[in-house]
Length: 175
Image (tube, rainbow, N blue to C red; front, top):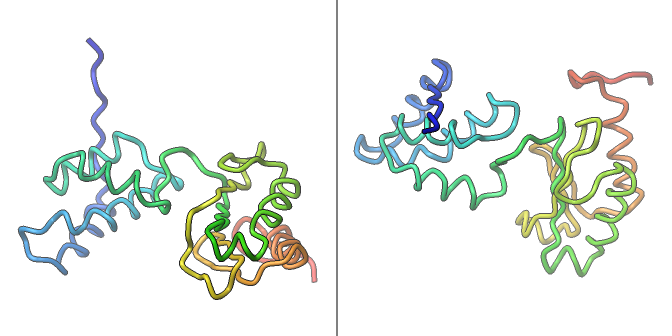
């Protein structure tokens, strides 16, 4: 019989979750699942494992399925390793009508990566997402926590060039 590996959350993560839970009544620990998953994912290089989700469920004393439902429904959680930078391109109706497919095709060529894959150098993960909630600025993409709106091929190239000129710690090279 295969033994399942049990993981415990780090002290830093537990403290963060405990602080977050102070916002809710003691009997509503499930309300902390979003933030718990976010902080666990951040500590785990940007993705969640089943063991980590189980640890969140155990820590919050909620059913594991309640954690899995959140982690698999929302696009902000990643169940597989992602590149150093994650780029989400919205292809919902407003973005599609304003050229999102051209933007997505260009990004695939420019980054040498297919949709929902990570580049060979692990620098980029490119995803097509249903909606980023920024329809007035369509087409839109999100890189990290920042939104880029009213995209054109030229704007995409300028954005990618900015990242190319940044060091891994976010400092700029050159000019």
